[in-house]
Image (tube, rainbow, N blue to C red):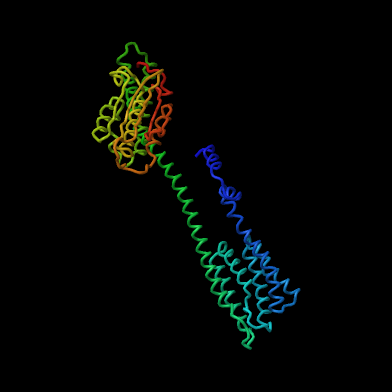
Length: 429
């Protein structure tokens, strides 16, 4: 989506409050700030409430109540970044406050943990579960259990005490620690999965590129081997075909022939490395533009209405001279484009056209949407086809343009030089 369309959509939709637009543009920023907002809010509420409850309901000394209020709630601000350090401070302050609560001679009040302690401690457990390991969380919960049981033993035996909150804190803290740990592990699993998918996609693309390069190298072997064989034969027979060849010139011809034979041997050894076990069919002669008629006819038999357009009769014969690499690359580009039509848009009318101008060959394959509803043979692709086209075009120094058409069709346009950059104009031997 373009920036213009995004801005226009924003102007047409008026949010009910100004902050919504900011939240919509940067939700991750708000999610990162949310823990700080919650921690500040809890600390701002719990400090005065804890101080007042301890002082008036549990008859704790005013100065001590203020100190306990700050010690129990203020570390929640630290819990956002360093939850384990904050827990160490809070657990000491909570135990000290709970000891004063159970010793207070008041009736009907929750003990040993006040409601403010329960709320702050659960927030702290949540922060711990999202950052610490399972072993650390288990230790935190065991400390909570032991402290709760010991403080319950110190309760006033007169029976005037209010509800026992030790079991409540044990159960709730265990639940929060468990759920937070599962949530963190789920997030880490998803993050690792995304990373692995990204790595796999990169490796898949690299493997596709290497496979296509190896395939092109195997196909071009026959073309290059033919020329090297011709050079070797011409050099070997030159001294017999030409009269008056001196010994020095004969030695040069023998050196050229030996170099050609050595090159052929190196190429065959390289081909053995590049050729896979199931590539036996590639030993057949490679096709060229003279086989386009057969390719188009085979595609028609497959149910795709294909029209082949040539600039003039016999353009694939003697009237057009292209290098063997361009000849093979052009055929393969058309073949892959028609294969994509069969796989992804069967029944779509397709036009294959070739044209020549100023020493270049233009190959154009355009298919429109199918005239009748059809089910694609494949919903997704491996990307081999476009990668192979791109590599072939780059090999001969041409250009490639592919993309979807406004009506739903697809276009493949390749502009290739008649001769490869290293060939120049062909000359007779």
